[in-house]
Amino acid sequence: MRVIVVGAGVVGTMHAWHAVERGHEVVHIERESEARGASLRNFGQIWVSGRAGGEELDTALRARELWEGIGERVPGLGFRPNGSLTPLRTDLELAVAEAALSREDAAARGYKLLTADEARALNPALRGEFAAALWCERDAAVEPRTAQLALKDALLASGRYTYLGGREVREVVGGTAVRDDHGDVHRGDFVVLCTGAWLGGLVRELAPELPVRRVRLQMMQTAPLGEPLTTSVADADSFRYYPAYASEALDALNAGQAQDPTAAAHKMQLLMVQREDGGLTIGDTHEYEHPFAFDVLEEPYEHLVRVVESFLGRPLPKIQRRWAGVYAQCTDTSRVVHRQQVRDGVWLVTGPGGRGMTCSPAIAEKTANELGW
Image 1 (cartoon, rainbow, N blue to C red):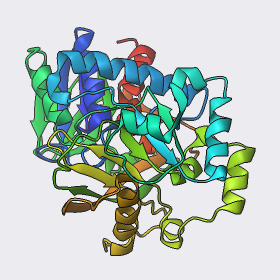
Image 2 (spheres, rainbow, N blue to C red):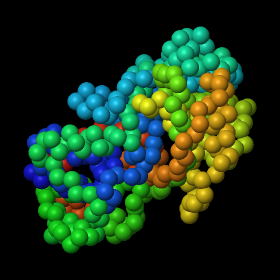
Image 3 (spheres, rainbow, N blue to C red):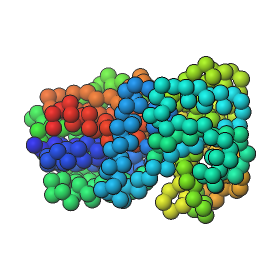
């Protein structure tokens, strides 16, 4: 069988991976020379801790298992089971963590409430003041800037994978075939469109009422920290953002502990991961209203620096990069992904939102299973 995959971000690459793993031939088409969108402009977190229960958590846990297995075969992913810590400073924050521990699925997530000393023993770089921390053992990380390249190299080694960069697919023709902007036609048994936040052009023609929106964020990366940050780190504002923490305790936090005005204005949380070179990837903001601003604003970065330095108890290393990115999210945010047959043998898979890096292997596996690959 021959599968045409359009889009070389992490969702598209994982569809190619599952097709090749099942013995099929893949032609992979990407409009850039290499993927440049949200699949690279993210934390590289495999983030189980905050996922909603049910399908979303099941998908994240299955994806975590798949990431680990793929990471053993493709060392260039930089997979590491580093877990995450969310330092807690107030009684209201502590109450949200305790409510999370009472969930039926708390053990599956690897939740544990640690004292400040226990958290510092786990992550000695956290020298700032906090009272306790929520630990999630199942969280992990990969290197987002190199993951697709490492996966592509592994796929090329199979002998059943062809990568065509710098080609934009313009048309679906003759059933399960596509024509690119070079005029070439690529024929297969299935076509899977994994175009990420590119929702215009061909995607709009095929799915004009697509229940997916675009979200913009800002992030940054520092010079090497000079010491290991042994876990990912979040702040308690992440409780307000992730559905796993919904509870009466979260309602009390929202009512009784206002966000910093900058954080509230930009719908912010702190997420932080150390890269293999020792630098820190730090974010993020959320912008939902279109058209997006073209400016990269400084106030959110200043807020993040203050929060990070308060946890580290030391000045942040020099910021080397700042960037904005856009991802696609289902308008019904309880949905893991939008998977739609748009023509006979042609499928569109998009809208995983901020869970795309985490869930992509399991999303692609489900597509492969449903299509009978």
